[in-house]
Each structure stands twice: as C-alpha cells, then as structure tokens.
Image (cartoon, rainbow, N blue to C red):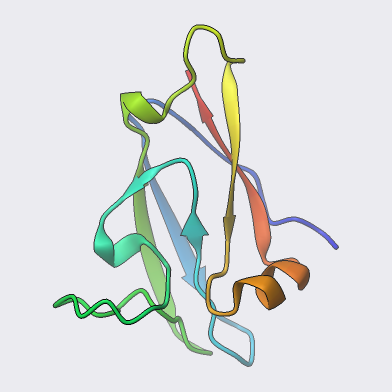
Amino acid sequence: GFLGPVIRAEVGDTIQVHLKNFATRPYTIHPHGVFYKKDSEGSLYPDMSPQDQKDGAVFPGRNYTYTWTVPEDHSPTDDDPNCLTWIYHSHIDAPRDIASGLIGPLLTCK
C-alpha cells in the first residue's frame, strides 16, 4: 500500500499534526522518535491518567491535533546521517491499521 506523507522536522521544532477522520472507524496517530506529552501520544490503553484518553481514539467525523517536539537527545549524532528515519502509525489496532496503510515516515534531522 501507500505510505502516509513524510513528516520532517529538525532539532528544536514543534510538529503539529491535524487528524480529521473521514473513515468509518476510529484511528489515532502515534509517533516514534519524537517527544510528546500524554495528550499527544495517540495510543489507546487504560492507564488511569486524568487525561485518559482524549487522544486515544479519533472517531469518525471528529478531529484532533497532536503536538510533538524534537529534543536534542532525539536528534542524529555526529556519526549518524543528517536525518534519522522513524515512523508514525495508527494505534487503535496497530497490526490491522499498519497493514491497511495507516503508517508513514517521520524524519528527525540536524
């Protein structure tokens, strides 16, 4: 299948991703390789947090904005290429969602 769009950010950047769910089932966006707070992790699981789980599922017809940052300790080192390749994906039913193409590249760059 097709991958989602490339998201590229540099150290110190703040990334905002707006998800508008036009599908018939709930989805999320869960990133790897960046920093996020609880309300932007995009993972559905019972964790008993007070914010349990505004970002845990974006239902059909709804939208949600995720905010992620790229801190220095998540960036490429001097021995790495200019950008590190990570992924983002839906985390409602991760195996099914990823197999359906709900995955994309996330680049963190110097």
